[in-house]
Length: 570
Image (cartoon, rainbow, N blue to C red; front, side):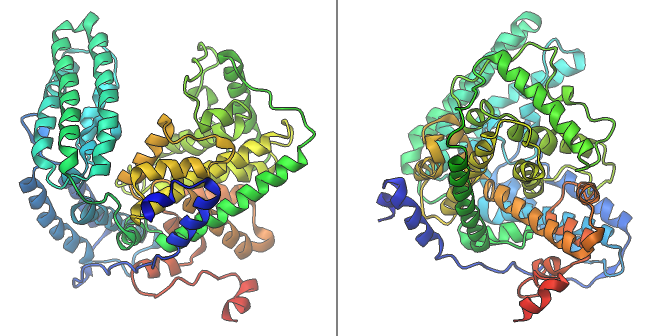
């Protein structure tokens, strides 16, 4: 029955999916490792954090990271010592800010623990070894450096580049031995991605030919190794079994103990479905309201697209500053994102939902990318707090980063950023938000093992309005494989926005007439790129979510506002 359900027409697919998704039961997180607490300082925590960051890195053997079963078992056992050291630290008298650092370190340790207990990408996921696919191991970032940096290299750079390039075939030889639990759906992603990665190495060989011709053979050997690995996966995939989804219970644990989200699988499903209902309804109302307006003015040339982009970037920065939405620091410069003096880039040959939206109304999408992401990154570069300002591992930053960026799309519209622009741009904003739902629901369904990877792509297309997504287009492949390989990937986008709006409501109710939008946004951003539950605790003083995540309360008390307390008791 499951196999056929997702081949039905979209009108029958969605109710069937909802019925299946409603079967989930959310699970409480496991309590932390018990250990007698002892006095310690924040400096002790910082040293532990630094030690743990080094510990996460796999050993490098003959130029390649060691992900063999023996090496991973050693790491798993030694991880328990780090967890005991962390839980032995008594933070009861620490400031909230210092306690937040402790929770960040705890969540990161939980992330590595989850990788060993559940996902085990080094033994289950062939795409883990494809550097362009974002290998989940920190050591793989060194190999992704091959795809950055342009020749010519100086002597030291050349030596490092040669060593890394020559290690690529060793990675794939090791992978064939390591993948003892490989899963068919994950194998299919590697088969799809391997030829694309091989073309990257072909480009590297071309780039090296002029300045470093002695490395061309190494680049070609790396290309051949990737293609050989893809062929090996294709040959062995029929003998593999198992499902790639982690299951609802594990999904709950991952969200609550690594992402520090109070919302598990079931709560996330409800949030996504309600948002989907709302957005499709609002789109239909907006289209009705605009029914007599002329069609969209499509940016169908590179120059027109580039002109729209640069106008939108300047416009949105002025709106944020002059509209007192948030403080715009002096270092903000839209030309960091796109320089008007540079030639316009060609339009994409295979247009995705993102491009379809941007060629009609570019501002919401670029607000997401520029204000939501680039400024976030530039702000992080200036954050010198050693734990809070560090890069997050295991996608711990995802709900905060994407929740903020996606919230900007619609909330800026409600604040008036589109008021002076063509009215039909509001339709584009709703379509962009609907696309997030079309990516999130398959994420939930795949990890509940209700649908396969192929079915997820069909479902994504069925959920997207206007036929703006197709199951075989590159974007849909990429987003669905991201969902499957990184649990909560697109669900976190939607739930992160909902969590941000909850904090918005709580802070506005808490401060009443003293609430100032710019102060709220500034304070939120100053919290850093960390889970929203921690930012909320610091901003409002409400610690119910943290107590829930620690297993101290059965459910978080989600109502604090005086105006709602009576309704909560009733």
